[in-house]
Image (cartoon, rainbow, N blue to C red; front, side, top):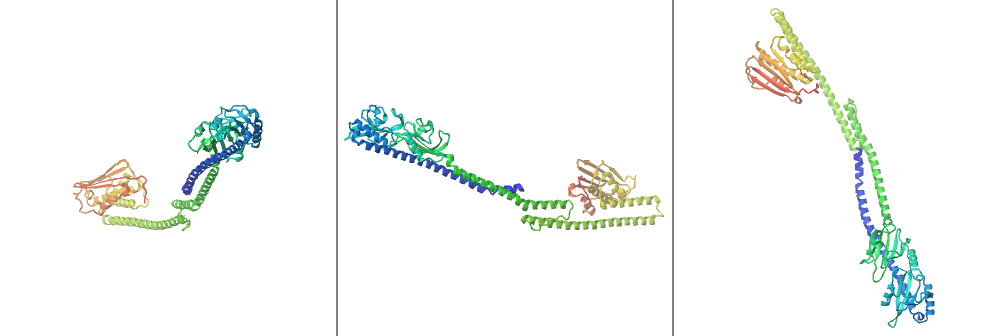
Length: 550
């Protein structure tokens, strides 16, 4: 019962658990889409900021190009002006004016004068374009500073006068992005068109100047911005938004943050909900146990205990519920009413049994008195004309008849051997040694009910034979035999040398008694055969060993 109540209590939590699982799946899907959108937005913001930085450099180079001394032939004056410009703008390194053939004409670092950079791709692109050209990761030949070189052509009247070249200091670039900050577990990584990392924040030693991981190389020239989930070099699973290299920006930009950190509020909410469900389950289980014990298990136990006590003989046992404890209380009250009714019927049965026993004893007494009177009349009537031996034989047969009635009317029947039962039943109907009865059969012990049934059958058959059959003359005799096959007993009564026998026109009372002497549980099989030479009666029955007197 407790297990069933516990199961019911837990079953009540199934809808809440199902709702929790549904909400968890739905919210996680929503959160996943949300953080992918945030990662893509973060990469766009970084790209926008990088555009503003390079727009500032473009404006700086445009302004510098209009200074006469920069585009003139005054090299010393040009060096001084460029040095002032470089010192005023901390985000750049050296700034130089380069001739169309690639020779440095003047520079904020005069020692660079005369160096030829015609082989640099960004210089070649700047000669062919009026836009700001951004090169790849470069370590300065003279300054030994990591920079992103930038170049812009200087034209006068459509004629190329040279190229202004400078470089964005990567250390400044790194510091600028670090000031911007990232989300918990986040990062920002910028690489050039060849996949060389130029900025990584938070910084990881040895990363800047190296190529990005193989798994990210296809993203450099992806057709459009996007997001993905991947494990970074530091081993953290992140959601990453990326901006591939394009005509407007020669840099690959990636911004992302830890997926675990992003899902932390969701996981915390899930854990809280799971703990609440668990706590609810524990409270429900405890309540089910308490309520089950108090209102179900204990009342049921009381009912079962009362029934056990009543079955054990305590007829006063009652639940005393009388409608308490709800429906189970009504069951208890119904059990009490049933026990009251059974007690009443038992009292009535005991009274009826006492009356029956009294009447049985009285009948036995009357029968014995009647037989005694018959015996006395016989002695008074025939005492002087009949030999004493005949009278004694007559008296013995009358007493045997009385003994047969005692067997039929006894209150406490006992098991008996078949031979004894047969001899006692036929004793009133013959004298010892007269050979009127021929009895044969194995040792078979009959239970009480079978003793009474067999005695009743033999008594009726013998009485009928004495009136109409083989015992009604001095020549007839009766053969009684029996056998046992497994649990079945077969009894045969056969009359010989008596008056001719005819089939009766109707079933008499004696025939009914013989046919119904055994109860149905004995499975009796009865057969009457009215032969001319005498009646033959056969019966087969099962004398169950657990049979007891009723």
